[in-house]
Length: 362
Image 1 (cartoon, rainbow, N blue to C red):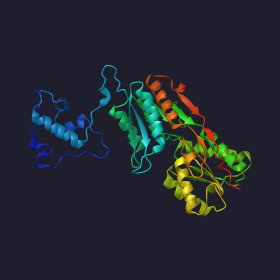
Image 2 (cartoon, rainbow, N blue to C red):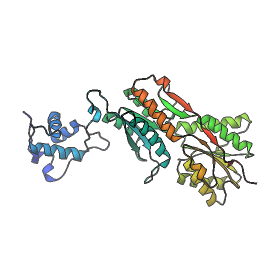
Image 3 (cartoon, rainbow, N blue to C red):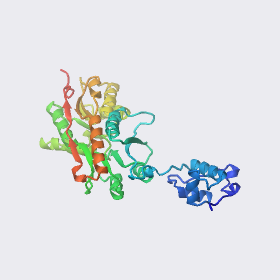
Image 4 (cartoon, helix red, strand yellow):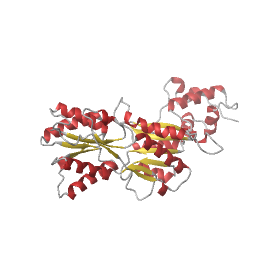
């Protein structure tokens, strides 16, 4: 017989004090059961409104589960196949209150590909205050997806280590430096960094600047390696004043531009390795009394056609975010099917779109 409970004695529920959980604690059936002093079986049956549980207990369990933030494990949605027919895309959001339009086409490419194959796509926002590892771990423990796409990889990425350990299919947009092989798609950022340096040096800029993404990310370090390689080929030194790191947002680009041209008034060019940061960089140049295309040359990099519409339009190393999204989804589908990870790695070549912004107007 299923146990019943005197509700007035359950953790002061009847006194209106409510239930609480520790910050960061994952709420499971056992969490709810322990809080109420009931068995896991009773809680499970109550949430399903089983006939063996009285109405009062059902209402108590539902109220407690809601207050504690309990979410059911969706991993059993399809009991016959053991699949959820859903994937998750983890996307970092770098600006509070703003949507990153640059990644919208990547999401569309991935979700369109998966929808055609009977999968739904869940977007998992990673906010500024969120722990990247915890975000991925929570998705896995919820059992709500069959595979995960993650971006902004680091050399020794803990998320990748964890996904490999638990056996969750995944693919990364970006590489790591881990010895374990894992599915990934990436641009050849080292080649891009070297090509950007050569273009600016060939245009006559003596000490062009590299404005790279945060140095915690693998692709930022690849940009730096390529940049230094191009300088070394010409027996030129790269000083610390020539390489700067910033988050890829317009606000950060604007502030950095004002600072670097004030500190380095002789600087005449930069490779800004983020089209969003480049947009802000142009504004920062104007704030500092400089003008892109006239007394300061710029090259950028990104996955949209936005630089075509800048004033002035900027030369850019372009790749299609939409196509990358499709390729990530295709690789994830194969990873879910159990394909060899060694066969699920690809380096995409960027296209150089030349608006001659690496040159100064006569």
